[in-house]
Amino acid sequence: MGRSPQIIEDQVTFPIVSGLQGLPHVKAVRATSMFGMSFVFVIFEDGVDTYFARTRVLERMNTIQAQLPSGVVPSLGPDGTGVGHVYWYTVEGKGFDLGAFVQFKIGISVTNFLQLTALQKLQASADLLNNIKLMLTQLISALTI
Image (tube, rainbow, N blue to C red; front, side, top):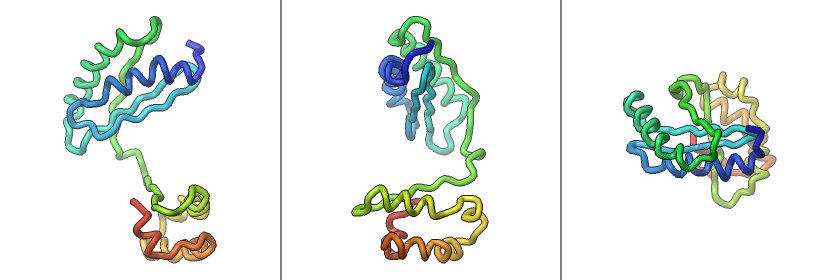
């Protein structure tokens, strides 16, 4: 309790994330460390039974527990799905610096963006695209939605 984020990362988050790698049907293991706590998210492939997934995580956590500092008691949170996530997107592409992607991201109001059709989204982004000198074909190949 009260440990710095770096200590939490080294002594708690890393052993848990490392230990959860390789579980059957796991797509990704993501984590964040902060002052006094760590959150680890295990993302399973679509279609995996929730109870199967939770049981595998609990089994693995029992072995990981021995590697954690005394006083650290990990607990399994409620199961979740992607249903609560309204809209996620990434902007990726080779040959563009982070500043260009941040410029693109800031230029789009998510609230307004979600209400537009795909064609309207491209039209609304046209001025911004001209400012950061991305051609439309480059944007389409760089976007992963």
